[in-house]
Figure 1: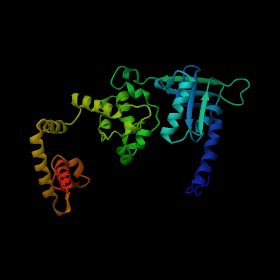
Figure 2: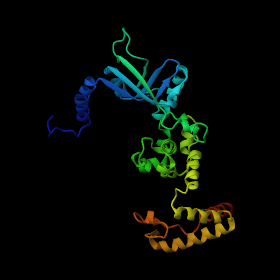
Figure 3: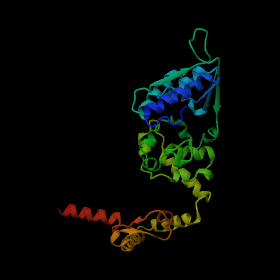
Figure 4: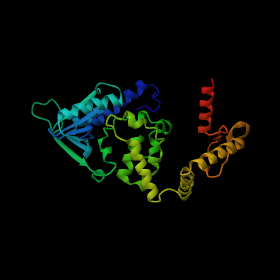
Length: 303
């Protein structure tokens, strides 16, 4: 291939991918795919794509190997058809995806294409340990991505920031279940608990509640930094005493407003170095939300 070829246009990229990758597909003896679902009734694997790359992988090679986790198994074809419609609508708004392919065993004598051998590898990888726990409902996830599409944290940081093949709210619950909270405790903390993920989930998985469970486990195992634990203890002391809490937050809002000065920005603040190291902290307006709301209500009633 020419070194000076133009690869700036989408058409050029697509043409090169077709020219180079398609040869590899035809040369490969083994194709390995995942599966969106496995149907117990018929022994069928189902893959859902909008590009058709999965179909090339599983039909051109002599051997097709399916690697899928155990929660992908559904009882019957009818069950699968219902979930497929949920998957497409929740993921991209389509009635059905462009390519929905059912594969049942190796090629038969009258089939025009397909592999000579067909193997299914079931992957546990910690999933059975979730059974009977507060995280069992996570196994209902169909990987539609609806929770990611509506998550403000995911929109701000992107998928790579999660450091896992499972990003977004569902990854914040599933990754600690598979790899341990000691290795991924930061993920359930990357949430505003706004609840949008749960409200759009087609499987009605209580994602915020499960992220809260992981936070509790992290705290119980002393995985959080000592400064964070001390800060939470101080907050809990005031939160148990509403009058004292309102007095302290009112005083803090007033002081921080003065520290912010005319620019209303704070460049450095004790215990907030993780924030102020990279950016200024916006100063409050001088009153708490409760005070602002009370003043607003009083003004509306007076009007």
